[in-house]
Image (cartoon, rainbow, N blue to C red):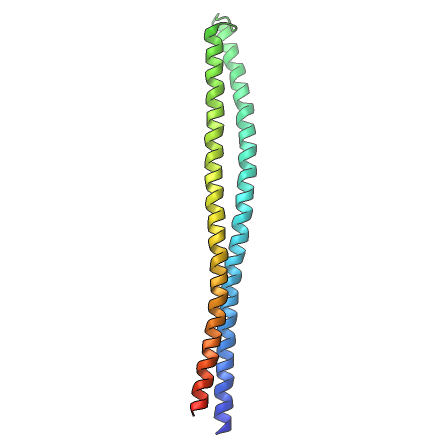
Length: 147
């Protein structure tokens, strides 16, 4: 009678250990995902900053070409019309930069939210693994004790 009881207890322990390790593995996967999403959010903002600078430089080049085109057309580049064109171009460039930055920030915020959710999922998976292992042990020992 003792050998079947020991075998049942060993089986229960192995099952509980497996459930515990499964919860641990799932939690680890969620933690890894959260870390990757936080890095991606940080990199996204760095790229956005570089893109903003590139857009500014491209805009200045475009404005230089506009000045050349206006001058080639015989328009006084110091005239009100030429200055209004250049001011409008500058505003459009800055508006595009602002839109791009807002989009990057929204994407960053989504990544950070997803990372937070993954951290919560990691905690839940870890807890579920422990609870499942405990439940398995308790159930196994109770059924073994009833025999």
